[in-house]
Picture 1 (cartoon, helix red, strand yellow):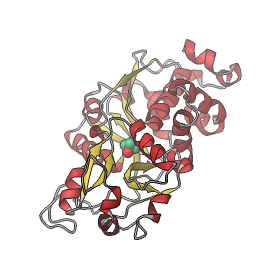
Picture 2 (tube, helix red, strand yellow; picture 1 turned 90 degrees about the vertical axis):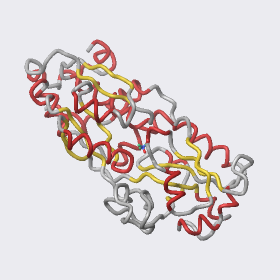
Picture 3 (cartoon, protein in one colour; picture 1 turned 180 degrees about the vertical axis):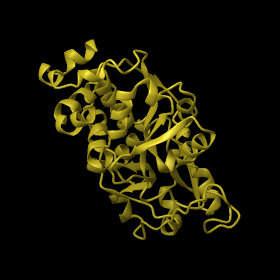
Length: 313
Ligand code: TMO
């Protein structure tokens, strides 16, 4: 609360709904933090909103797949960015076990997949087809990958199954996992001066689309079950032989016990709905403007009172 009062103006505080204060438990609401910027900033945005309503908030850094088990058990209170492509499977598994529920969608369409900056097309004009990409594999070869192409996938905990996809579609690529999101941006940045062709994992909404125009590789279209049933997708004997959903959801997930323990905060959570441009802006404040996530969140709240204040009332 103290941090919040120093961060936001008295005018904002005066308009906050303090009537909600009595209802919520004084135990801290536990918000999980992962390893990409929009999620970290959004978590701080919502944490500061809830603090402004009188709640106590704590942040914990957690694995982005294991978090669904943590929400289910109430060890963390909610998850603000359930990306269909990366986390749909873990989310569905936790839903089936019980203890967590779908707390609504953001007004956003998401995509996560193999991606290239536009200059890459000059060396591989058949893009965005995955077959054309594969025919160009040598263009992406490095000392490390021999005559196969290099694909820089996301950090392992995003479970993108790049290696399985390369095998399932018999592609001439070596999949390397980035150690962090920053390593993905470094790979694109390093290629930019010479317009070197690169293919890396990327997603939207993200800050990157405003910095480097680019396109996703078009893989065989995602079909439900592609990650569960080998007969789904073009290779009848393999899982992961499809792209990720091209129009994926972005959901919020909540611990079932939140509604009774923090009813006002829960109501706010169900109303929260960020759009693609808002989410891209949150990432930009950190990745382009180099703000700390906490100050980025405060800046975002200051600039977007008309968006979030109705959710706290
Ligand atoms: C889960 N992510 C947005 C990094 O693809």
